[in-house]
Image (tube, rainbow, N blue to C red):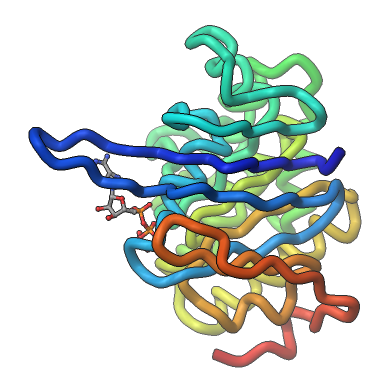
Length: 233
Ligand SMILES: Nc1ncnc2c1ncn2[C@@H]1O[C@H](COP(=O)(O)OP(=O)(O)OP(=O)(O)O)[C@@H](O)[C@H]1O
């Protein structure tokens, strides 16, 4: 059984009299330890997919599994624990707490997890060992995203789920963040999924899932992913 398993997942939003089918039979697998890039145009269903995989919402029908455990039939309490313990989230706009230092931001997330990594170690892993006591406003956008990645990693999650992680960053910094995510996957064997509209990211991925109109239109593996530093967009 694959590490991440989506089988015929549908999500229909009811908007008054109108039904919007955001996921229309989404089926794909991701293997443990892979860097997976999920790519598609606006409205393809990427955010909806991420919300289902991240346990923020439930599908209308279909099966979602992570590490052999069925996520799609968890109750509210089960989903809360799943989000807290199993998933590390990295968002486009970092979502750091402004009045906490970098170290405190990481501690805040890891304290509530059963098996966290030391916060200072997680920050060192993203190259911020010298910035533990800085507040977000004292850090650049790229550094803030590094704190967000450290915060996600410190939870020691089964899956690192990244939603347009370079979307708010300039080209050079975005490339460094992509490299950091690739290195994290390689160095720790952690499974990383990146949702993006940027098709250049597919070059660095072990697995590429193209999404369109609520379906996975192609799933391919890449035997020799490029290092992020060599990718242009
Ligand atoms: N909460 C919601 N209520 C109603 N419709 C929704 C909701 N969320 C998403 N949709 C619809 O579902 C479809 C897929 O949206 P989704 O946000 O998942 O796409 P996306 O690929 O992430 O797009 P983008 O790249 O623009 O963020 C769209 O038609 C969208 O309008």
